[in-house]
Length: 433
Ligand code: DLL
Image (cartoon, rainbow, N blue to C red):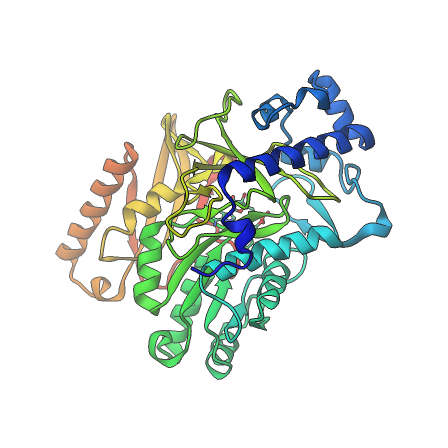
């Protein structure tokens, strides 16, 4: 196993925890003393920096929410002066005001170091050509990956999103060995390549996908890997933490959260109680070293499980399993909780089904009605009606079993559902329109 920063990545757990405690303590003192926002928040919750006597005391600290950033738009809670800010990113958000994230040079360096470790852990380095097909600009995906890839000495091909045919030509001509984009965009790239007569498996040097910014499942991973002949790794982050920061290592068993950078907790989203390692709940992260926009116990809203055992790769930092959904993505259908990722999980186990689906929810009379529109793969679509009806029943049966709620299923032609260059939008909830 190759590490970017072996001393840090393989540090014994006890030492990591001691380091986290020291970083937490000094962060809390700094914010209490110099930031009116954090000072007032701590006072309101009757907690003083002196109350933080061990790492476990983190749970005494108040939570932060996305709305804290919105309420303080654009930069009222920044803890760096304009002179020290070197960059902004802005996340569009689906509701209300956008959130603005500011960075000092140290913030950018730490973000880049996080990605340098992550990219090294999936076997990338000098000699690789990394095609960055996340959007460049206000979104953190493009520029974040760009600097991480340069830091490890790889060659960056900064294609950003869009102009897909050109992306494929450049991938071939410049010998891209890795591509960083959303899983949805890679599916689209794969389809466009097929239309162009390019077989990504044979006609390109692509061997790695760095895929994230939206939920996807292991079933989808297997399909992408088999179809395109690459290894597909999950990458995670949010703009409030900096941007994309954490990937799975070569084991492909959850992404490593670097303990010197971030303190991860899982909490019960309803009660706010801290949960044990291995229990499923809402990810909550404290960024231990950020300067311009520190985040203490930031409630991200993503649902997952943290594993604290040392990884077989040798890294001692905890791993977070694949994100299962967002607290606010959860659909309640006739009282049953349904995550879009459960639908994907069920569908990807059916060989006749293609990679694309759409969920449409509406209220019919007093009842919720869920329609899942499912693209078939090409071979199955050409089958005759009785065969198609069998597939339809199979899909309905499978969805009912895994969701515990009835879904109507409409099988549709390959290529007929919308394609996405960035984050996909798989759910149309007409109840909330
Ligand atoms: O999506 C940062 C990013 C860029 C991550 C490129 C990975 C790659 P935001 O736009 O602020 O930042 O959105 C963050 O996207 O809270 C999750 O709900 C979701 N998300 C990000 N990565 C994953 C992933 C970027 N690997 C929000 N799996 C997060 C599931 C993800 N959801």
